[in-house]
Structures are given as structure tokens and as C-alpha cells.
Image 1 (cartoon, rainbow, N blue to C red):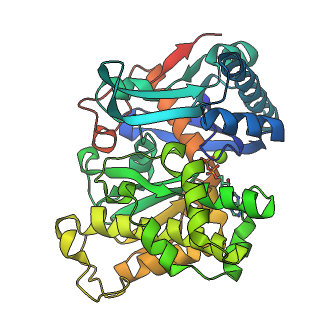
Image 2 (tube, rainbow, N blue to C red; image 1 turned 135 degrees about the vertical axis):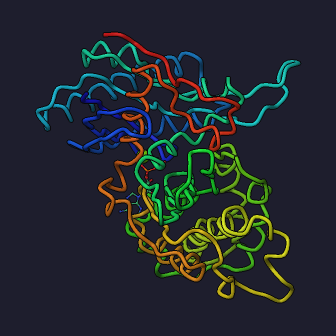
Length: 400
Ligand SMILES: Nc1ncnc2c1ncn2[C@@H]1O[C@H](COP(=O)(O)OP(=O)(O)O)[C@@H](O)[C@H]1O
Ligand SMILES: [Mg+2]
């Protein structure tokens, strides 16, 4: 079956479409990536999406219109990819644009609820593309008691599990998330969670300080020095201390976090501010790996008094590879600092590209795979990753 996976992440940079030929079932699925393409959002659309995400201000009419507009843009992106590849799309799996995500139950009007909202109208995509569409993947997992995220561990387990090699798979999107798959693991052994910011804080600072959407290849960060005093404080954020499973979004690391971060940087040089944000991503990931993946039972004892840095940690754990994907994998400075974090832990840094899943296409491929499972009425959440109490068939279907 030929399926288009459509992803637009929290970076609000645009739309990734992957055309994937899929056969088999569940974790015995086989797939081949036929084509992949990125379609940046036009600037006013990106602005509208960011404004809607930062909430408080968007009108209901604008939100309703954005839903239909994004449906049109997703459909155009699928049609353009289909045209380039010459393949006929039989099914679409569209993640949509997350406007709000609250994976933890919290009181609201007298009830404790979780909530999530991915926009981009499936019925519009189905009508324009002429194929059924699976969209809105997250609520079914949340209805089963899960956090609705992460959903990519389905792909991670499919592609990266190995009888003899334990792997940690790291995605560097707006938010950074990892999936840890010990050697010979069954799906119940998978650990996955958001580690905190990926590119989100870096992007916001680049916009504020340089009027640019992101730090291309990490060139600005390469010129600066991290402000250690600022890092020390921001790494105390309660999110980093919370145990997995956990999810993050603009609610944690959006506008307010960035304003506070900038305030703490004071009059520092602009490049030092960007380097500090880059180091924040890498160090929070390093800390999450040590605390929650490699040495969870030693979490409290992990930092003896006077011990600075991590180079002395003894790598007695079942992991040997660390695989990066997502747009942030192109930020060389980020990847360099990450390497300095994980290599002393005995992890070899590798790229998703080496496994036949190009870094930037991975999440789009994941939603093609998830749509395929849903189409065949099979669950595809990984309960160990989301915290759901049972497997759930994900998504809603719009027919052409
Ligand atoms: N050449 C590059 N150099 C540095 N960062 C990049 C580059 N290309 C993309 N990025 C980063 O990746 C982000 C997009 O990554 P992506 O995986 O699409 O995230 P999301 O899933 O949140 O949309 C951009 O916002 C930018 O921060
Ligand atoms: Mg993106």
C-alpha cells in the first residue's frame, strides 16, 4: 500500500511529506521510502500558527479557518509529492499541527482532564487528494490513560530494535524526545519521553536577536561561549526533574520560558546567548539519559559532591548507540555538544540517515506507518512509551 505521511511539528517550520510503500503488519511491517519533500509554511501562515499556539489571542473564527487552510496546504503538499514521485497515494496519515497539548490530567470545570488539539482538516485533504485520510492520532491514546505522546516509538521499535545492540534514538525537533530500546527488547521494555527543548528555544532566540528563523548549521552557536551560571539555573526547571513518561511543548518552553531565559542572560553577547540555548538542549538531554535511561536507580547518587561534568561515569548499561534525527541534526554545534555529552557514557553517535530513514523524514514516515496500522484496525501506540493502560487504535478516518 502506498501511503503519504504528513508531519508538521512544534517548530512550525512547515510540512514534511513522506511517500512510503508499506506491507506486513505490526512490528513485522516492511516499508520503503519512495519520496520525501519539505514544504516550508509561507511566512504569514507560520506567524498565524505560532500565534494560535501561543494562545490567549486567537479568535475562534481564525482557529476554524486555520483548520481548513492547513487542510488545503497539507493536501497541496501531498499532491506535489505524488506528482514528483509518479506514485499514486492510496492513504494519507496526517499528524496535523498541534495547537495545544496537555498530557497530564489537570482540573478543569470540576473534572480532571487531559487535552490535545491537532488542527488540519482531514475531510479537506481526503477530498483534494482523492484518498482516505487518518488524522487526529493522539486522543485515542489519551482516552486509554496515555499522554498521547510520543507516538514515534512505533517506528523506532520497528527500525532500530536489535538483538545485540541497545540503542537510544533521539529526535531533535522543536521539542527533543528520545526512545530507548535495550538489546533484545520487547515493546514493553521501551522507554520514551520528551527530554525538553530541541530547537524551540534556539529558534526563538535567533528570531529575537537576529531576525532569522533558526541557527543554520549551528554557525552562530559555534562562535559563542555558554553562560554557565544561566545554564545552572535553567537546568533546575521542574520539567527536567520530573520522571518519565512526560511530554513538553510550547506550554513549557515557549514564549515565557524564552523571555525568562533572555532576562537571565542580561547583557551577554548575542552569540553567547544562542550558544547557551544550544548547550541547554544538549545538557538537558545528557542529564535525562543519565538519570532516566542509563542509571535510573542511581539518580540521587549520580552527582557526588564536587563532581563536575559527567566524564567519569562508568558505562555499565545495556546501550551502545545513540542515533539522532530531526531538523536539529543539521545543527553541527548542537550535535558536537551532544557528542561530548554521550560519548563519555559509552554511546556512539550515529545518524538516522545511516539506517535508511533520512533525519528530516523520520516523523513523516512514522505517521504513514501509524495510518497503515489504523487502516487495518490495529493499535499502534506503544503503551510503555505513552503510559496508556492498553493498546489503542489511533486516529479518525475521513473518506474521499
Ligand atoms: N540547516 C540547519 N541548521 C540548523 N538547524 C536546522 C537546520 N535545518 C533545520 N533546522 C532546525 O530544525 C527545525 C525543524 O526541525 P523539525 O524536525 O522539522 O522539527 P518539528 O518536528 O518541531 O517541526 C528548524 O526549526 C531548525 O531549528
Ligand atoms: Mg518541522
